[in-house]
Image (cartoon, rainbow, N blue to C red):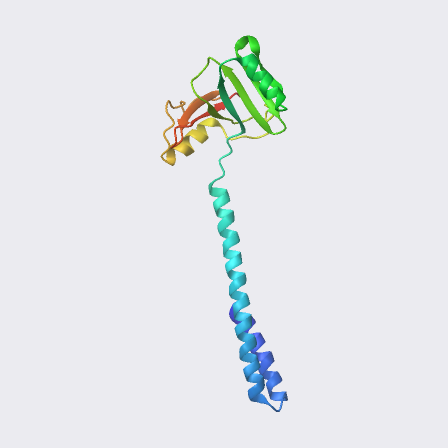
Length: 185
């Protein structure tokens, strides 16, 4: 395509040179225009390649983990609830009597858990959105498990492949942060 375009431009300019008494001047101008056209074509080709590369990267890194929240280990659930309400969070779910609350502020979701685990946990919920509502489609946790394992990520206790429905597994990032993948459906 590039050759056809250049040939067409070159032919048109040569035809114009034959009509101009100063052929050398026209040929010089033609060469300059051809160099400019080649440069523009090369830039366009690079932009197209970059866009295609970016699309490929996005597709390769597209593991849908579902809704995201931070699960916090708290010392006193009532005190923490009041603190986060002062930050604009409202209770979305959970139960004080069961020692946990799910709090939300716009798209930010946190879980407050008293006495259930050590440290804080990054939590992903396949099949749920950030409102704890079921999504139309989702990637089953077993497929996520398989994908992460294929990338060499240690997922701890494995979910049996021949099962379905609710399940969870945990992994730890290189800095020791615990990540919980927790499917409720």
